[in-house]
Image (tube, rainbow, N blue to C red; front, side, top):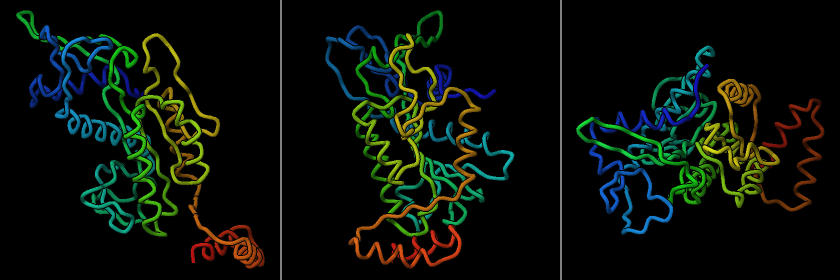
Length: 292
């Protein structure tokens, strides 16, 4: 059984990063010389903003997600590709996809080979204290995200807005993007102010889901939403649950459509599409006409 996001993954991030980054690049230093991942709630001293960790955790979480997805699709002859580029659907050198599921393993992709796009919005969830003394180096968890001042992952409004903005940019870039599902992958819950928004985004077809792969982000089993009403947000509790959802995502061909037409135009489109014999052909004609 494969593990999802947990404290051991975060320990691995710090351990690996300390091979090439200094403790000051990874931790805040308190007034009494403690090294912590986040400022604890109620910390009275002077606070600074730590930017140097962002690119490190960004690359780590994208690679971790790529490896996780690859384990799901290994037996399907598909590939999880980190940093994929596809200019035709607005995935450029400056703004590549974090991860794609594709028929091809290359960085440069064609729209017809991309089966799903995954935007990764993860960060360190728990608070950690780093110590180095005569007895050696230690890393101790000192609390979950309710105990520190940082808003990690999908709890950050700017992370949510960036993910939504990028998804919309892909959606409107080309008709070739209309068949590709987009998932935003995180490792925290979302705030309740986004519950209805993520459901609306799913119903509207912009994003097919905001998914968390952290089963237990709170140490005391506190408030931790499993899913929103229409499953715009969903928390996975084990690997098999994630596997099932990805397999379902890849099993059905979907089409995104969006337009602003008068009722008369819509009526004419429906009437023309309805002349076709099968449901599939009706749908095909409808999508063609509504995007003209």
